Image (cartoon, rainbow over all chains, first blue to last red; front, side, top):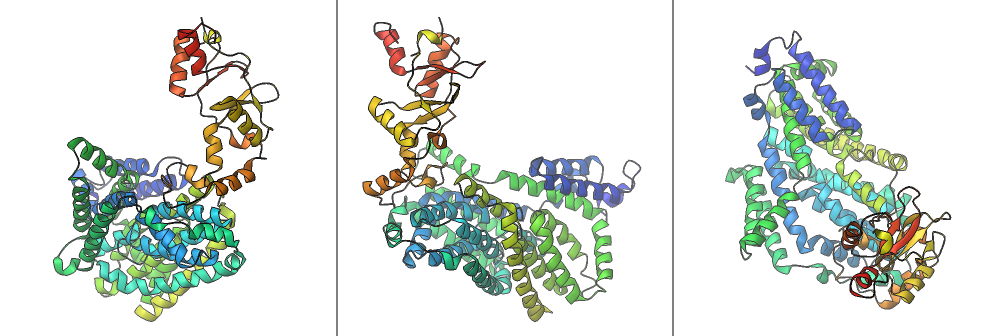
Length: 445
Length: 153
């Protein structure tokens, strides 16, 4: 029995009302962006405990340390790796492979962004690719807008393909016990189709008008990608650790390893390789620097949110909501899966997909008896992942990577405005969800 | 004794509508590290610095935060930099004003003035707090002369 169920009335109120109210208030305040989301989530988590809905022990039990460990571990690996110049190398190399043709560069950078986003955090990926994009477009004397737009899409699309590509997948994978391979096998095929399909309208809207003078293209061709590698030793170490980490994800199941262990161990090994020749003082500085690159706001937001959702779940409210949803869909798996897909997409285009997925996970788990146990829920998990990750493309506030790119564009004097972005992005997002609908229906229903 | 004792009270200034080319000419001619910019009423708006001129001939993205800390892979020649300069030299200096330089009130103490100059690492605009008017500029050379030399700022 959970603390919530044991608690009975809270201050004379039904615990479901108190937990539900706290949850809705958390959502609303996070959406207003008036107060930092980590502060809001931690305050709400504290109030869940003060209200007696959860004990501290139960609250800590609700925190998914597998998700946190995987996120933090990968963030440290990226923080160390990016010092090597690997990502600039990749961007320049890909631009030169298409002879600095403006449309070719757009496609190549989108593909690089999608592939890197599949394995690393989306925000980090766009933060690494966008500056090189601005440099290249400046040399080509073309607008950076279509490039940045396509990279926003590519980061969210690519991130959907793997367990580690986007926080919703990390949460779903951890909560349901899905492996890295499960995500690749089930989502990567449709992601390739969606990325290709997304580039077609981008070509007709912007791509066909992109032209650069021969001398501008020559400038880009003179870029020397080898020179972008600022630390060859660190590059080799980083690539070796990344390769071993990815292999460990692939073989995690037979090795009986959890993602957090792999990511954290990989981070520790990379820090060791990078630091062992250094003095104690220098090591302290380097390790401190790597740890400061961890997005602590995201980590603490997760901690608070896990507790809030766990509190809500412990009152039985999510189970009631799940029963109601099953009633509405008539217990039909096809209707439920497609409803999860479309509702997740629309919701994630306007609200943060992390709290949305955190709420949906226990809700979907509660539907297991209706659909023949946990195995019967698989179409719902893939629908949730596709909807929550791809939905982020719908508006400028749909995903953190979108806002980061918009911030970069603004500083570079090429602002991405909310409404023009919405007008192009929302229909494109709907196309990706339509493709997902066909895929989920044909493959799982 | 105040900042007034250390400042040059007839500083060379730019108007915000002056062209960047004019700012460059002044900076090169007088070996300034920055030139204050004022509005029609003589109110201080900021400075145009020699560093900002350098930034204008670099790829723009390389001068923003630490997005591209190094450019070892870019092989732009002086001709390319000259081409970038031609694209910006006729723009008004108002597009290139830096406002993050510290300023000091003319009535500030000598120690406060020298400390602010020390923190600025470049010449210090002397701006009246009440009116916002630029009344002078304190340079390292002016302070040096006042202390080591004949006492003339």
